[in-house]
Image 1 (tube, one colour):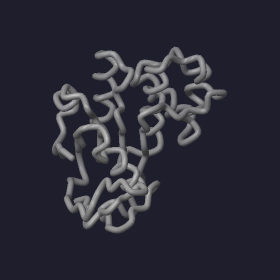
Image 2 (tube, rainbow, N blue to C red):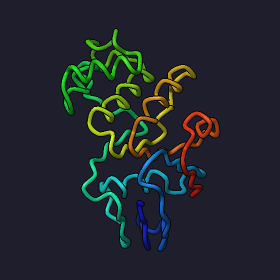
Image 3 (cartoon, one colour):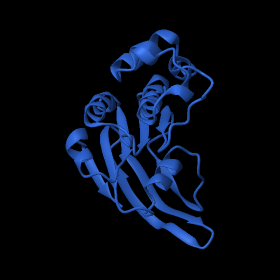
Length: 183
């Protein structure tokens, strides 16, 4: 179980969380939903330990390898799709993952030459090359058509634990989460 206890996060005068406490499963898909600005991305950053809260404790992620898919693709534009993934794995695994997201033909394309949706799929593939233990995904389907959304959802369902931020109500049916948390 992932436990968040007495979490407080502030950015200047803006309080995002004030002594928030809740738990979520440490296996399966967890969908975080809520209006813009409510703190979904902030929570992912706290879980990834890229943001230190003012107070509070997160337990249940110790010794677990965490990967992150950001809202916008963060690729090395001068590297190919395969090279971006192989940075955290190896070329064979990169090519396998590119095939799963139907980008095998773009394996040798520079990231700067890919469309936004293609870049997003490379980002998702890279996260899974790094770790399937805990995958944090912030709006992973943005810029993807329906077919690619389904393909990426299939990959996301292979994670031991996937915590997914989404505004789109259709993502719940697509991902079939074990738990939905409305923030």
